[in-house]
Length: 247
Ligand SMILES: [Zn+2]
Ligand SMILES: [Zn+2]
Image 1 (cartoon, rainbow, N blue to C red):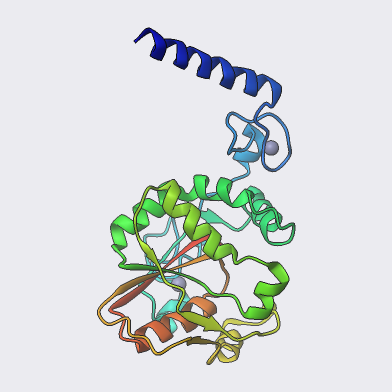
Image 2: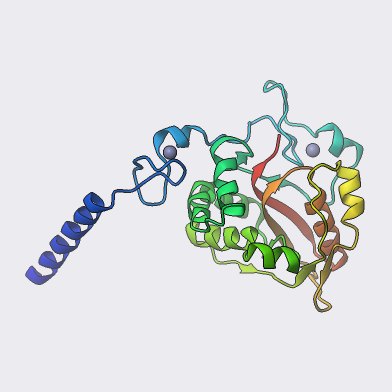
């Protein structure tokens, strides 16, 4: 017992020494943070949650925060094939800066901070939707070669460990390279995405509930194209979880 007590004293002494030598710093601005995987208070304030008033299906935030839960005009006109989009944050402020740091600054360790911030929402979505599989949105080979990592795969892995969930990840789908689509409207994006996703080998998702995981949702065209492929492979239902929704 005495030995154990001595050991724990030494380890707490070591961690306080480590903290005074290398204090935890904010992942965004480098100022002091409370823990090693976190943001300072100012950057934490810049994390904007998805407003409570948003489309029941695609999570598009509504301008008026008074309205009752309903579908947006886009989903009313043509209901997407996926059941629902879960998203904890808006693609603005600190979340946007952290994601840019990952995607364009190749700062992969930042994914851990994003996963810590999103873990409670992710766990709640999994408990509500009860997926059998997680499907990170694939990147084309060319984009994967240029970036050297797929942020949706990294995010899925970190989310699973940060939320202590045990779910399988599916990597059976490949993606054809396309030029960036950011400026196009939803219908044009969807048309351009026709046939962009395909199975590497013939595969059935017979009877499975699939949760697609991506970093950001803009028009929902990517999620729609991937959902259609899953449903064609006989999936029972498809949901979408994204870190951030573009307003
Ligand atoms: Zn900061
Ligand atoms: Zn909608």
